[in-house]
Image (cartoon, helix red, strand yellow):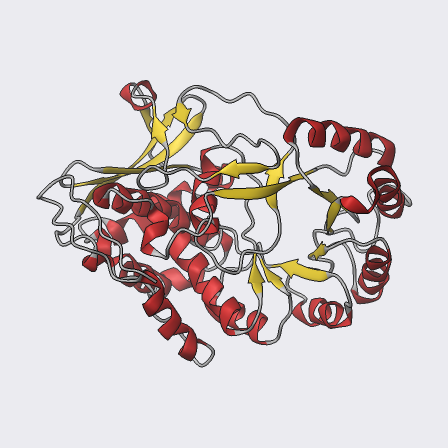
Length: 413
């Protein structure tokens, strides 16, 4: 991979030519399976020479959303939107996580993440509530660092190998009949040009109960009958089945040419999910959107619980920790498709990840059909001809209208 040079926009930032980001990445993969802690994959100091000291972190409310804004001493800002689960987590974010970042050099993001994860008090809160808070700050910090360097945040992790991402349209409901669902998907495919869909099977954490009697099987049959063999179908069970029923559903889905089956058994039942994965002949098993532990990810990868790993960019702790999971996937011959059912600014880190990952699996998720987007941010993640273009701007690639933050309300937990 050729060395890339970045032109400094400010002498203060002290930019120099970057190293090959995937060289350190590849060296880390060689030793990853024996590690208790993830090996470093970043060398931001080789891209940005000067300190980027984090001066403050604010939660601001505006245009019906809450934002986390990380500001450096030089006045640079990194921004991301808070996801809806943060409504109940602000005390953890503001009281426990933010202090680890204040006064630190943002370029040391891996060291900061490691310090938080192994703090004597913080580890007692481990799980999505903790790592979602960490991910919110980390993603804003990566936006800040990208803006400081004048490059997309993805460039810290690898060379961009995709400028557009092929998407599937996903249905997030189980409330429709098979006929209603297929009609909805026909409309969405016509609007977006997508060549793949994902539908819900089972009842979600439902102990084998379907959303309605026979809905899952009838929906799959009708989908295939309506669209023929040219449509790629993914199915998501959201932990609906035990092992026996999960195996039955997997066999049925394979008969109808479904390509990916997500989370058939309870998400923490790795033994049952692994047994289903090993039984498959033509279909791949995917999962991991609730997982946050690095050691658990290591075990999932080594034991091939899933063929496709699906860390959530926010829930798992941000971009850096998602690339740690990717590293484990590469070391164990697996692929990756981060969980990101978003079409708003929360989708931005996903597109940074997807643009550089060499093991991205298949089509990626787009919730629903054609959208009408607000005018307070740009670019929009608009799907056309089945794909979405990756933003090219610095950081996460988004620009916000000045009015968004001019009169924003400061939120304190």
